[in-house]
Image: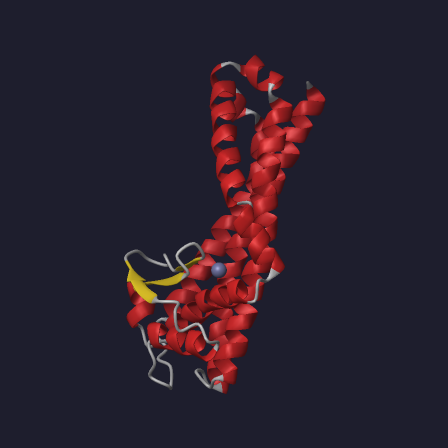
Length: 228
Ligand SMILES: [Zn+2]
């Protein structure tokens, strides 16, 4: 059976381990710095508001959404969404995450090429991952069918991998824009910088893990196609 191919496991393990490690690291960093209050006394929402306003993005609203670490910038709505903890939190973690999401709004405003490219390939990525799941499922039932469509499966999965590859520099850039603004506007103090970096670097590591998983899965599919 396709799922129990030991070779698949061999390819899946590195990404899986890295993913678990990244989640543990993020969880630790986030928990630790969610207990460290910022000297400025600002909430994540206030810090985001300040960064956006200073960049002339007064028209980008900052809204609260449920969920843990569900924070994101929505380019279609041109709005920033912060999880309740980060919206109300007056901590290093809350302000750091809020600034990171503001960083995406700044990328959008600056028409940062990779941000635009990533946004442009969202629909095709969604289609590809759905179609890939369909082929994968069909292959689970009829193994020979998967062999027949393996080149299509590879092409579809390559789109997902490309998306994750582009995501990486976009995420790192959002964090560096965030840190630059936090320090320039005096929203965090010198000794709070390390905490912000630790939370944002740990978050970035989860994207690295996702990319590694995808690349390994793609390599596995390529190995399978050579075998056939
Ligand atoms: Zn981000």
